[in-house]
Image 1 (cartoon, rainbow, N blue to C red):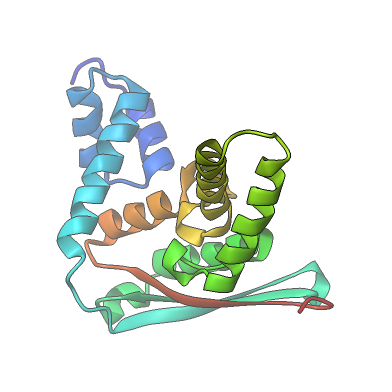
Image 2: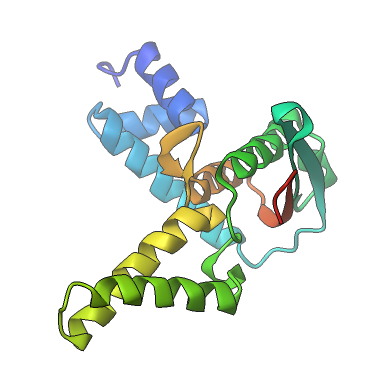
Amino acid sequence: MGNISAAMVKELREKTGAGMMDCKQALADCGGDMEKAIDFLRKKGLATAAKRAGRATSEGTVQAYIHMGGKIGVLVEVDCETDFVAKTDDFKEFARNLAMHIAATNPVGITAEDVPEQVIEREREIYLAQARETGKPDHILEKIVDGKMKKFFKENCLLDQSYVKDPDKTIADYLNEMIARTGEKITIKRFARFQIGAE
């Protein structure tokens, strides 16, 4: 680990939220390559998240974010396994950051499964009408529409969205970092976004 400086470890910790020993190990395993070490820690975080998937989340917090002098407000519920984690500043800050992100991006749902069927149908119809204008055959039109729907879900489903404070990672990445950091299953349970003048 001789070639791994304290500054590199600090930078990796800031970028991933992982513990100091994990960061040192990741840099050592990846020969000091910062990008590879980030990927290494993300995969490790995903593995931790997968192990925790079956656990119950009966504790948590509800956090709010109010924006534009009271014109936009968000409430978000984030659940975890223990009261100890629920009360930490780190966990509360995570939930507040989510509320701020939701205020900025206005997601339609947490995952694609949460998007109402009528919204999906409406989007598909719009994309199909646009695709038809290209004059391409039907089997090509379907591929064009499927591609546009994938983009729609990425832009409008919370877990797939790029995190506004760090666009290099998705909200799913941010969530998995929290799971790895706390060692608990964490679930973004629900959110409500209110905007003056919007239905």
